[in-house]
Image (cartoon, rainbow, N blue to C red; front, side, top):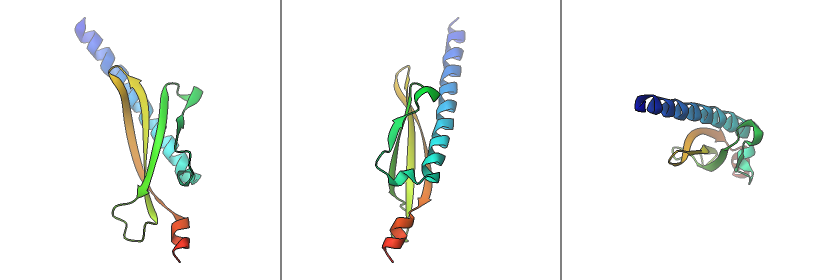
Length: 105
């Protein structure tokens, strides 16, 4: 019986992690496509689409960028309540900041 309980928990955890990864990819694509990463609102919830999941993003200059910070690294974290506290998945991408490159010219 204990093995069945463990297998069920592992399956549930994998399902949440897979759902969180899909949500992170979708939100990250949306943020990049709309240049939403340059705005002030870098956190939120998924609402009815995925109740219990929330997201937050951080933006910082890419460490390997030697073009005066025109490339930004966006890290998006999806968080949900797990059995032992909050759990999360983080996805990252790079985005070219056109405003930084035109401001420096």
